[in-house]
Length: 166
Image 1 (cartoon, rainbow, N blue to C red):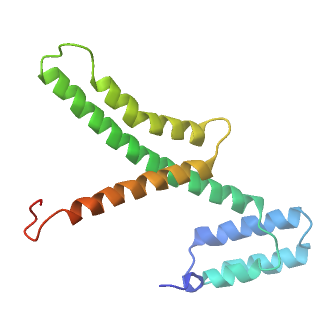
Image 2 (cartoon, one colour):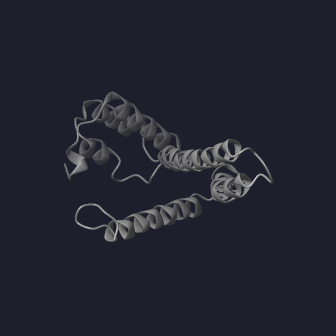
Image 3 (cartoon, rainbow, N blue to C red):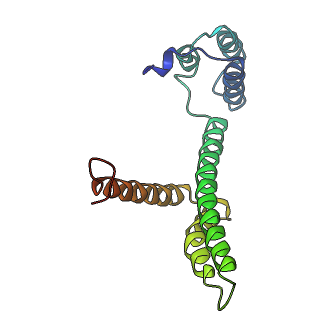
């Protein structure tokens, strides 16, 4: 469905709208009568468009901004965890190979661990550190994702009709 405004809303969506309306009333943007009317409209709302119509003349509330920020941070945390899992898997395979080869000489998988986990640690600090910078983290994750896609396309290009490499 391309028109999100026609989607039906759940009770949680109605409660969220009521919470935002109460915040606007506390800020002095709505009178008690307007708040009561709009809360009634929120509980009668069937679609997202019905809920949005109740807030069309109001600015974006701080709870909406905080909720959107929390959702975005959660999505970035999941993407970062996926990358960390891939890096940890590669590091474990290299460490296992080093142990299987007799664990002689210097610990060369340390280089693999450093190079694969360094970007994840750096982005984790940017995401969870004191000066959280979501745009930079998102841009770096997207750039790494696009590089992986490009490598995959190059590999596909080198394969012949039967799936053999040329």
